[in-house]
Length: 84
Image (cartoon, rainbow, N blue to C red; front, side, top):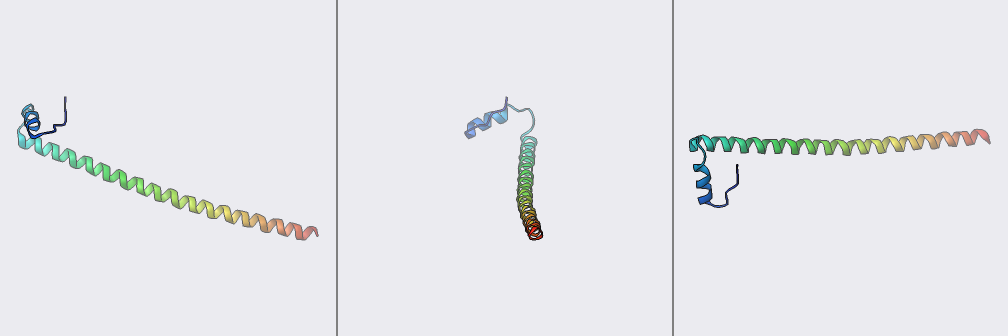
């Protein structure tokens, strides 16, 4: 069972419980941490890109909605003019 040591003596005890050499463990833990950090960075970039996309789509939708309302208003105005 893995646990996170809170002091150097606990860390030393934890390191003694592994059978692999210290160098090999350090390299493994460092690469594991680096992979985790890279994953977190990649996820953050993807989230940011999706937030920007949603924002842009909302703006575009609002613009199309306004154009549609303007077109309907112009059409209704023309119909009223023709009826008179």
